[in-house]
Length: 344
Picture 1 (cartoon, rainbow, N blue to C red):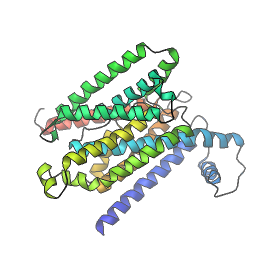
Picture 2: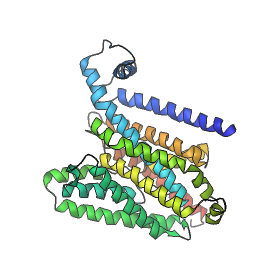
Picture 3: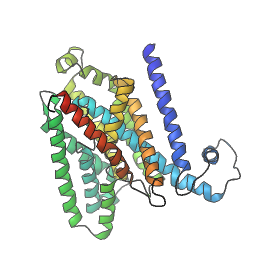
Picture 4: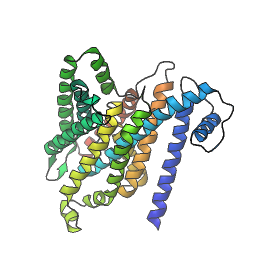
């Protein structure tokens, strides 16, 4: 009963923050719309109220520009937040994150390769599939290099991530060198990470893999809790860590690849959100995973809002904002880890 109350409260607060964040992001931008009109237009579009006296231009901005952008930001933030929480649990390492350890770079390489070869034009899901393959290759490589006796040390994980990111970035740069102007513009987008120009077709593209992959990861929340006991302890209660890890990392690669396929590389979401929420709600993954998904969605929606309004009328890429927020926090975590190990 206590657990149900705790997870219920955590989900209620997280959902409330997400709703408020979404309304703020839909209302504010190059043209501000009142919160009242924003809510009314959304309710009208889903058929709950009759049309009001707002202008057609305002309705167009809300429905065709900001709502799909916020939906994509929410889904991508959800994907990165829950993937970060899963990776931190699998590696038993607070530094694990799809961006920092090179998984996003691998996914971007997959997407860029699909664009260059023309594979992306074959089907709506061709780019997400290529990004998923790239993310899966990166995850497998990093896990093989950094894991020793079932554990991944901070230094080894970071070095493996740096090496993998450098390798994938070099491959991406090589492809750029042989690309035409149109292809190059598309590829540069992936490298910067942004949400401008995204529409409902992109929402449809990533909704299924992100939601289904995230739901599947929630099923393994208990396994992640058990694996905190160590490999022998996990096997003692009927959990095979190797199988669970492979499934979880594959699912994390799926949702990360889907996210990167429409936004490019957006770093630090999967590092900051799960780490802070773990301090608030505790290490129980049955609570941490869903809260990280909702928290990641809120974080990226607000980061994109900052990117749109901080230098109006100029719009920054959301990847720049998350880097400015995440890089100092990452340095703080690294320094704290060094102090705990007695290195400084």
